Length: 158
Image (cartoon, rainbow, N blue to C red; front, top):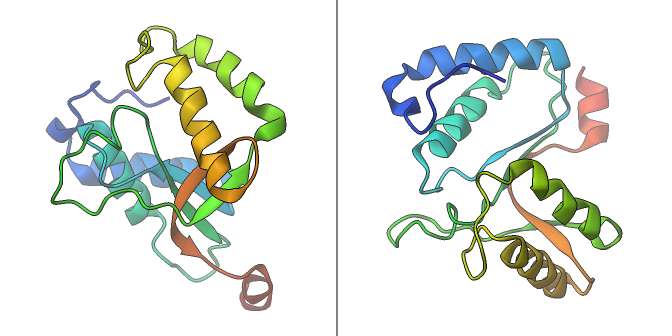
């Protein structure tokens, strides 16, 4: 959606990325934000996450209730030790949608790889099933909570 250089966002001033993200937030006025896990190996993911976190800073009148960090196969788990790894604490049951999710990966075909690569359709299915098994369902997506505000609290303060 934005015209930043692929895999070279470290060449762009962070403030420029933040302003672009804030512009989209003002138009969409979201109450939930999903963004990359800040410890991803991919530099573009890390910068995007940092820009989103900056754009999501608490402001009076902001109705944003949740910021959730997602994992990206072959980026999140490939980061070597020394960072705070992805330890999910929020899960969504996607059992009824897993086939649709896997089919949607066709639109990402240029980035996908063959099994046993972590970014293969088979690996993505295994990950969804593992995350599901972690909570007792067929398939799930896992997130790390960045911020979670109670909806009743938000209703009283906006």
